[in-house]
Length: 270
Image (cartoon, rainbow, N blue to C red; front, side, top):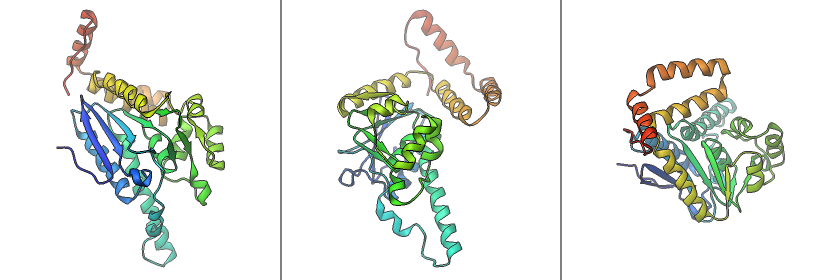
């Protein structure tokens, strides 16, 4: 059975899971429970064989307003000794990083569907997705600079791998808003839709198309793309050779080739 959550809503239909941030009265700001539940949720989705794609969305008027500022009160722990306070903060930051990295590590594709507000931690979160889609009114902002801190849970590490370095620097240094059309023009989002209803319908269609493919081949594709992002071409080529030597499914290959010849949809085991 799927787990239940306080700050998330999880629905599964036709092998596609939809994870919705569910603090609409707080603009889906990320409190302590949400950080932990994101990791619990995506760890579960990673293990669930019947789920072949995930949509990450937000309930209410906003996708995500970033870190719930109430969290700042406990970041340093209770000790007054400077070095121990620093160590506590470092461990807290590493834990928050792990909470979001679970989205990236989930072995099935994650499609972020973003409407209206996506700032701070929301940008960190969506950088972990495989693809991003947005509504016309969506905007993105690395807002940490405006409260006197350096973004520390993934944006500055992942975003330069997605969009041009100079654009990242401008966003990180100024904290300005990047609208949906600009986000599409620099390659952060794949498509921009008129409204949330249209976006969710189209993103669900894409997710269901992904879910029809061989899940093992899809997992391998995601593994290779992530590995190749952080390694040389030679290392990536060596890894895919090793992966396919052990993971290439003869059953899936036969089903796929047969379906192509017969012009029908292949059926793959979870």
